[in-house]
Length: 405
Image (cartoon, one colour):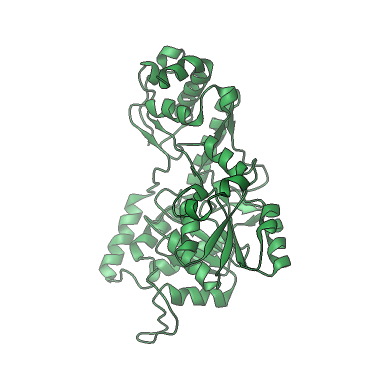
C-alpha cells in the first residue's frame, strides 16, 4: 500500500516543524507488517479449524520447519513461540552458564534471554563501521567464567563469523548467533543459519517475514535439535512420558500458516525492500552529515532495515532533532537500539562503568536512525523523505532554533 502524499519540500517554510504541511497524510511506520496473500492465509486457517488441530506440532508447523531449514541451509529447524523463547531454549540446550559475551548494541531481548536464566551477559564493544560485535574485543573479555559467545547479525548482514569462530575454538567454548534480522541473508556466499552451534530467527510481526508472532532455532546438530524439541514441549517424549526439563515454547498452527503464506512472497518482499534501499541510497547520497548503512556487494540480504547515522557537526541537527523533524512529516523514524543494553535496567546497575569500555557503542547508539520501508513506501515517497532531510540540513540553524525554544 502506498500512502497518499502532499507537496514536495522546496524551502524551509515547507518543513512541518516550521509550519508547513506534513509530507505524508498518514503515518509511515518502521516495521509495518507484511500480510501477504490474505486469501491463501485464510484458506489455511479454515483448513486448520476444519482439522481441529491447532497446536502441538501440527502439519503446518512441520511444513514451516522444513521450508525454513531449506532456506537456512541446515538439517534442522525447531519452530518456537517467539524469538526470545527460541534464544532462551537454545542457550539452555547448549548448557551455557556463568557469563556469555554479547554486544550491548542489540535488542534487549538478546541480553534478557541470558539474564532470565541466571547467565550474566558481558557486554562487548562493536565495530564503528558495521555495528557488529568486535571479535578482538570478545577475545579480550574471555575469562574462566565465560561459557559462550552470542554474536548478532545486526541489520541482516552477517557479522565476522570466521573471526568469532576462531576465538571460540581457541578457548573451547560454544558460539551461537542471534540471526533475528537475517533470514534469507548470506555470509561468505553461505546462507545465514548454519554458523556456530545454532542460530536463532525471529518471525515477529515487524520482521519482513512474520508468523504473527514466532521464532525458530536452526542447526546441523541432531542431538541439539532433539533436546530443543523436548524443551519446547515440557520435556514430553510421548503422550505421558517426560524425559527432560522443559517449558511451553511451541509455535501454533495459525502462526505457521501465516509464515508459509509469507514464504510464498518472500522473494517479492526482498526485491521491494532492495528497490527501496537503492532509492534511499540515491536520495541521501548528497545530504551532508547523513550516512546510509551499506550492504556490500556479493551477498544476499533482505534489506528490511534502512539505517542512517547522523553526524550533527555536519548535518547541523542532532539525531533526536532529526527524528523530530521527520515525525512532524508523518515519517515515524526510530532510534535503534538506544541507549544500548548496558544503559538499561537491570544491566546499568550490574555494569556501572560499562560506558567507559564501550565508547563506540555509545556513539553509534546516539547517532542511528531507522527509516520506514516495505510495501508502504515507494520511490516517490522516498524522494519526499529526501526532500525533508535536504531542507533540514540546508536550514539547520533555523530548524534547531525552533526545536530548542
